[in-house]
Length: 495
Image 1 (tube, rainbow, N blue to C red):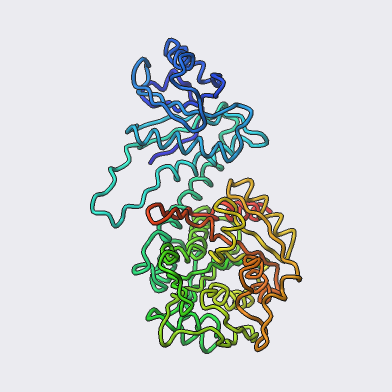
Image 2 (image 1 turned 90 degrees about the vertical axis):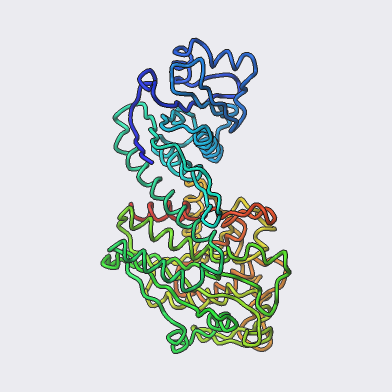
């Protein structure tokens, strides 16, 4: 699809489809009023007759009674109530409507909508990301493919040429983030018989091949055993698939201490010998969304050529039951030397992260952020809207929360108090890998905190947000938290 950001005049866009916002009160934007005049009052007539009421994210395509190729009206609700989240929802609805009505070329005027405390470049960036979301489809394994998208060109209107440079930069960032989100979604949506630890390693190698600023190193099981990664290898030992520790580096020539991202890469989680029930097994291909996020972010950073030093660490493992699988009450020795009593083999994510976080230390990172579909408890606590955030460094937590607000990819901080550490005590080892049902998200983070004492660290639990799970028929990866982390990294690059 061809994109451009420029100043336009609606009267000169007669060969395109115009995307216009309409408020619930029947009020039109400035461009909407001009277009209504050019259409001899067609839009205002529809509003007066109640045919279109401007309800939030409702759309109406018009192909008649207009001198334009077509109009797509999108409801914006009440003018004073448009929040950043609602703006994204409006934009996605409008682009989807254009695609559904086989529009070929469109000019979008949604930058006119008033959003408190948000700039014009922010709106442009969000429109770029919304277009990626609206056009996303995953029909790789269907014999009957969805028809190809007809939308070939999208123009985003800006009111004056003085905004051109910042809006171009914002659009470039938004488009790259949209591509990174798509890449992340595609990886996560693959079935686990294809997306194995080996496949993730190959994807990392492919990224390094395509972007010269990226380099990759893959640790095999024999190397991990030699290092002493007893926690990670225990999870892998029941599977026919060998574990991989994928180590990506971006802009290694930058001498500043790097930002390290650690992504949980359980390519399928049966629960191991603590076997999940059949209904809870569906969706477990998404237990590698943290790994997919790290790969997506490395791709975006390389596309934008950001002046930052990034490390991406992905422990990629399959968690399977069987005669060779690890068991409850086994005691493992981690790379850090700390011992762990296994209470549940279904609390495996924290085990592979423990060794990966310890491995990070050799890069002398300034900040470490892990991303993991770690606990069902976070879904109970926060549902499918907010990412669970815990950290041992409050300024880092604040920066991530702010990035979440700015990117429309929001997180909510949970406490990491010492009071919760008692729940993971073990009478036989330094710690247990499960603290029971109570405060499960927090005690999982408490476990990880024991491997992060030597650096500033934050943990993002994306079990509720990495994929939308509505039974067996409605399942799809979201690509979160690529937008949040990219906003944090872009801010870091500015500094």
